[in-house]
Picture 1 (cartoon, rainbow, N blue to C red):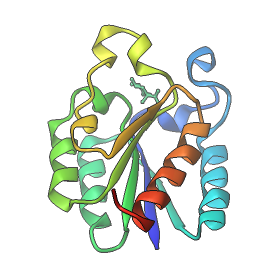
Picture 2 (picture 1 turned 135 degrees about the vertical axis):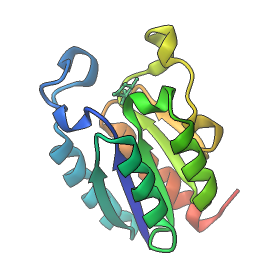
Picture 3 (picture 1 turned 90 degrees about the horizontal axis):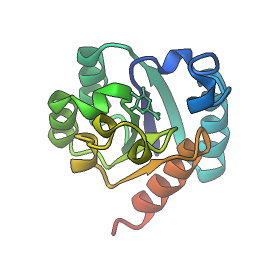
Picture 4 (picture 1 turned 30 degrees about the vertical axis):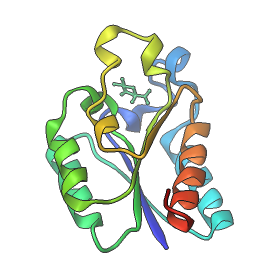
Length: 146
Ligand code: DQA
């Protein structure tokens, strides 16, 4: 079983980007930890990043048939992108939404998520550890869909 962990705009700058908000963990650190967690759960992990909305849409389309589920941190597109929401609906992949920060206690424009409308659930506020929680949740869902 294989899952896609997909990261959106500006997440390539993790480690140096607003460390007071996002911590000092880099995206490469998160990738390494996701691979280890995936191995422990018996999941193959493909880890991708793109800064562009259209490329994220393409990556979601390409995941159909190749991956059993999706973990998505869509960055700021979370709050704006009907296209990403529709892509997830179109491929019907079970999706767990992740954010490093707790978007609900930040600026009001971060409170709404288009991704949440089509996700199994949302994990936010636990920093990089949220990706590992998401893998755990997705593995559980794939074993016993609720
Ligand atoms: C984020 C939260 C978003 O509001 C923000 O635009 C990001 C990162 C997070 O992981 O906390 O780029 O998705």
